[in-house]
Figure 1 (cartoon, rainbow, N blue to C red):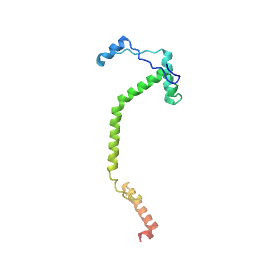
Figure 2 (cartoon, rainbow, N blue to C red):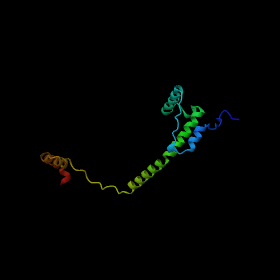
Figure 3 (cartoon, rainbow, N blue to C red):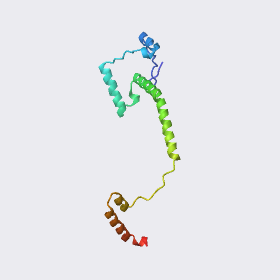
Figure 4 (cartoon, rainbow, N blue to C red):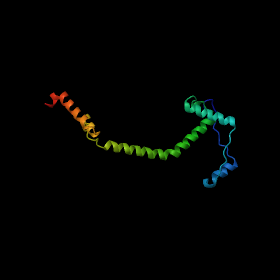
Length: 141
């Protein structure tokens, strides 16, 4: 007997074709696609969008869809776990490498006059140097 809080445990229903397909190698098996009615497909699609946007909570789904969602999530998680582990390892390795590096020595940035010389304006650079000499005469002496 089940209470209102817990859902009854459903045993998977397998027909003879699916059991035979499960026992044959995947390379030779062509499984038939399950077809839903248009109404059911639209409703499931609507719920999926509502879950994604936060308009619907997982707890509001019917028990059968909760079970399907959980199995699909766990299956997807298992399939991608090796990739996730490899990416986490790479991220940790790169982070450790960056922490071991010595930061580059800070150099004084080039002056505006130096930048003007690099740009090919030596006359303007000379004017800037003269103006700076006048502005900072006390510091230079």
